Length: 173
Image (cartoon, rainbow, N blue to C red):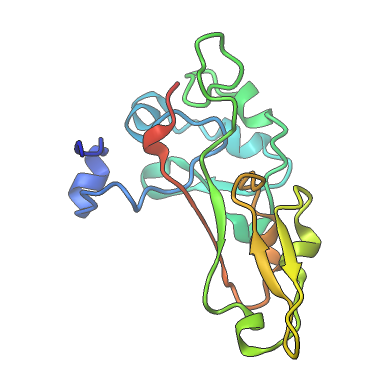
């Protein structure tokens, strides 16, 4: 297996695997190219109607799902003149906005027998459904292929059992 391409910042932080990359706005270029192109102008942050983009380490924009979900409106990409966010260019090979997917962790209330369907109630993509359990709380089932990584489930979870992440290494633009 080949080595993952990491940014200089990741190298300096000791993140040699590239796993600790912040979540960039949708349709972001792979991390090294994103950091190269982004001028940190904050136009994408101002353009986001959901206000989920914020300045992160080094002044680069990153997503904060605790503020809300991504609607994939494309406003951030339309104002990105340096081209660090690249939606709809003819050479784009990725149609999805990002490789982010949700996962449901062990802190989920249903693992303790508590009935909770908050994540599923907020999932417009219908990626989270519930399987009835005899004598227990319905267990969440996450369909990774249906999940678009919007983050609506993240803020809805009362115990922060939802994690959002994914590998940007396969995102080619």
